Amino acid sequence: MKRKNTAVVKTARTDTAGIPCSISKSCIATAGITRGLKAFGGKEEKMTVRTGNKFHAKKVELDGIKFDSQKEAARWQELKLLEKAGEICELERQTKFLLIPKHRKVLGGGYENPVYYIADFSYWNCRYGVKTTQTVEDVKGLRKGAAYQIFVIKRKLMLERYGIEVKEI
Image (cartoon, rainbow, N blue to C red; front, side, top):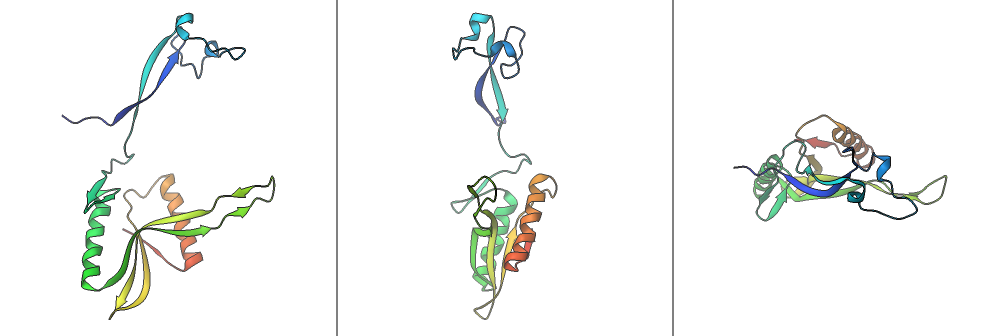
């Protein structure tokens, strides 16, 4: 029997009408005094929230390395074989590239955080032991949604800043 990916996050309190306290005005504490809802006739309920990947990708461990998906683990194995054959060199995982550095805000002071792109894989193409071009790869499942749109922007910034085209697998 498969176990569902659920976890108890917190207890939600409801008022006498069964409305969650975050919505109901009758649950708001006055004068900084918090009272138990049972005094008002309310009840406590446990809420469960689904955990796990939105697209049902299963995390995989291969050679002691954790991967976000089976597709990513399979690509790692392919790249390791290419590295052993001498076609690529300096294979790395989760390489971090700075896209936009930390900078001071114009209004209101303070700083904006830097923006990074973390590639699934990066390596150099090698000819006769000499590095020729750097390749950056990102393994993608579904090519839609907000996460993919952010990736597209970061892919374009990688091309503009470093002159590197990110290869989607």
